[in-house]
Length: 223
Ligand SMILES: *Cc1c(COP(=O)(O)O)cnc(C)c1O
Image: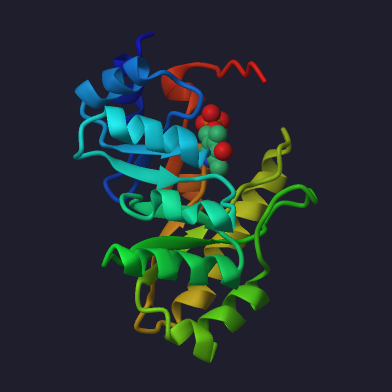
């Protein structure tokens, strides 16, 4: 099936409250344009340099989401245009995003990445770390960021029960943190679910899914 067909099939299956991020990492602009021409406007990339190049080449009504792990020293390169940063997992990074957003007179939306997987390799913070950041004095001074939700990645496993348990953990974390609402923290988004598990993620409360291979086909990594 074509990229357009894949996209239309997924979109028609989604409830209205779920936003689709088309994860286009490693894919050429021609593939992204096919999705764009089929109506897709939100694209997710995990490398800043690649996102910048695609942003330069493509129409300017696209919303670019950074879904990968972000190095602090690279925030400045995307601060002018990035629409949502999914993987924020420490306070220093939030502070840097705030600093760079200020230079461009913007408020950048961020999601706190929560560690829900059992694997050691997955980034993210605990619910305790997240809540102490939100309640801190230092955080309240960040006027150029807005924490608008949480993001999580389930363990890479075939065990559906485990994945479901992890998604439910993110949903309950969201509920807990939502009650801590501040001027720059208004939680609305739960970013969870990828090609292999997004229907289950939606059942567990996801409001934003990040789907790559089911739209664009499998990725081929050359390095
Ligand atoms: C690559 C990636 C996805 C998409 O994965 P697919 O299995 O291709 O849908 C989603 N989220 C993150 C953080 C990713 O890095």
